[in-house]
Length: 199
Image (cartoon, rainbow, N blue to C red):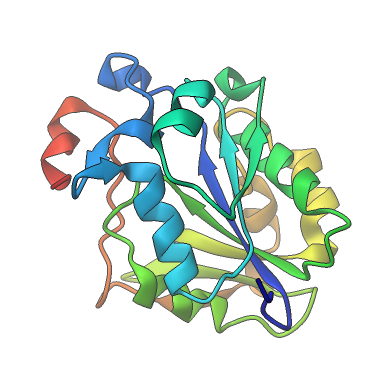
């Protein structure tokens, strides 16, 4: 496999346990006949990320057994119940030292965000100091592009379910917003009512 240059790695956060879905791990929700985690990896690859790291947590063994994730780097987050911040820290730590200059971070439970929106955010990369985010009607959302120069500080501030939110809020002026509302829908699969978005 040849990695893209400059190297922008896909980082998929897929550790959630689906508390509001009755404890159904989000990675294993079915979408188009396959686990949702497979769909999300496919989006990152179609957007141009040859290297994809996937952070697993809830039912990680089942995800490894049931999802086809060949070629991905699978990262176990034993602290997944502490929230998305712990998964972001684990994912960024797994990328450190790989030569990646940026991480394109997406969430497993947003199937309405496809390759076109993801590729737009990826295209905002300039160098290792880049910060970019998809926007929906001007409101910041996912995916986000995090240049490697920011990883240590993002990891230090990623707690609970906040992920990179606090860091990005503090550096708002440095973020390139990439409008994606015309090609994607930024809903989350959080509750039973949201399952209607899956096909």
